[in-house]
Amino acid sequence: MTVHNKHQVWTNWSGALTCAPSAHIAAQSEEEICSAIKSAANNGRGPVRAPGTGHSFTPIVITDGTMINIDGHQGLVDADVSTSQARVKAGTKICDLGAPLLEAGLALANQGDINRQSIAGAISTGTHGTGLTLGSVSSQAAGLRIATADGGVISCSADENADVFNAGRVSLGTLGIITEFVLQCVPAYALRETGGRMAVADVFAQMDSLVKDNRHFEFFWFPFADDVLVKFLNTTDEPARPPRDGGGRMEQFAMVAACEISRFAPFMRGPLQRFLTNNAGARYMGADEFSQKAKVRHAYQAFPSDRDVRFNEMEFSVPLENGPDCAQELAEHMRKRGGNFIFPMEYRTIKGDDIWLSPFQGRDSVSISIHQYAKQDYRRLFDGAEAIFRNYGGRPHWGKLHTLTARELAPLYPHWDDFQEVRRRLDPKGLFLTPYLARLFGEDGS
Ligand SMILES: Cc1cc2nc3c(=O)[nH]c(=O)nc-3n(C[C@H](O)[C@H](O)[C@H](O)COP(=O)(O)OP(=O)(O)OC[C@H]3O[C@@H](n4cnc5c(N)ncnc54)[C@H](O)[C@@H]3O)c2cc1C
Image 1 (tube, rainbow, N blue to C red):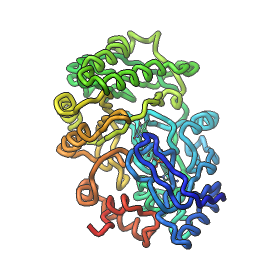
Image 2 (spheres, helix red, strand yellow):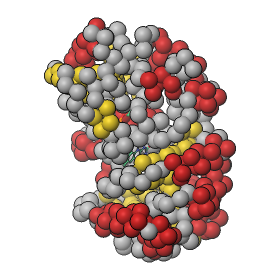
Image 3 (tube, rainbow, N blue to C red):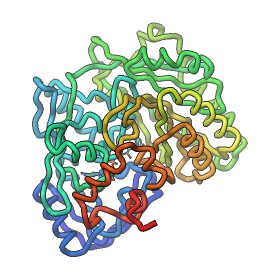
Image 4 (cartoon, rainbow, N blue to C red):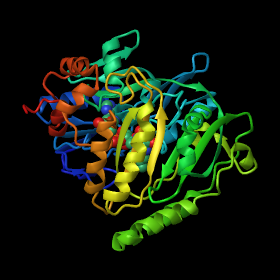
């Protein structure tokens, strides 16, 4: 275990959030994680936070107390192909998980659109991909081990400490530090990617079949454009081909250029959004049209995209049936009152689950996210958007920007009080509660 008592600065991915914890502890094993928690508690050095890879936009990692880094505690512990379950150390990065799982004949059933996060960070916030028959990454956790405020470890699953399991899968690090997961995987599979441009009106007219007829469907919509960019991934028996060689680099370059131009010439945002759409691919004519060009890859190589241009993001999940109207009202807001922005909205579907603080708890959902270039103010775009999301019954992504606190959050989650009971029981003195989290959970006296 390595301890640094210097005020090293920690920064999140977008660069918008920084903090200088009074202690940084690097823990390489479950025992070291427990010792680090005890040391912070005994020395009055809370609040304690365990960062993943800092890809959250909300200040859920920020602390001036102790930061316990578990980067050195990673790897696949074992995998059982007969149950499709794998034990994984909590500091493992998703990008380091695909190859060893494939070697064991397994894969994650679904992933988000990047793979740089730690598995613990992703699961703790309800990170998800797209696909109506598939739950979030959190819903793929079948068991957890959590190092708690008293220095002990609690093991949980649907059959053991079920209340901790229901609370712990999406818990923002407020129950303790997760040290290990059992992941419910699926047999390894390959995915075939197709997509292109589709007219906005056609997408909304065909929404039901686009969502239901594809394992994974999503679209990106630059609101000033007449087309959206659709993307489909479906399983295939074709052999996986070598992954692409950074083909996304040109797109990323065009994105930065567009953001920089519009920053100084806001009137260009409409033409630039149309340009980015029209140059992003051919018109989509159906899966067969592109069969020759379709990319076929191992699933873990098919999910992630390049996301090198830094941005800040807001995302809410609304009931499935509200998705189309919400997206269209949002696009109208973005065009009329969103100010100067370039990034598209992203529209995905997620299967409902039973995790107490999951945005998808009890309902199949559509997630809609909007982004603002990191060098530009996001408030004008996001403030109006949040009001629209809330009107459609939206629940915020825990890792993405929103302004909700306990008063607004509690009515959105039927198991809010159950979660609070488990959190208070496991962390009675609030060792893991920062001022931000205290406000979020109504423990700040307001
Ligand atoms: C470019 C980009 C793309 C993204 N794409 C998607 C996407 O496709 N889908 C989606 O849903 N989200 C997406 N996100 C959001 C991201 O997946 C979440 O914010 C996720 O939580 C980040 O994981 P992380 O490892 O960086 O964790 P961090 O942001 O560092 O931490 C997140 C939370 O997890 C807690 N935590 C971390 N490790 C532990 C542990 N061992 N025990 C207990 N708590 C822990 C932290 O304390 C914190 O509360 C994206 C973000 C970015 C920047």
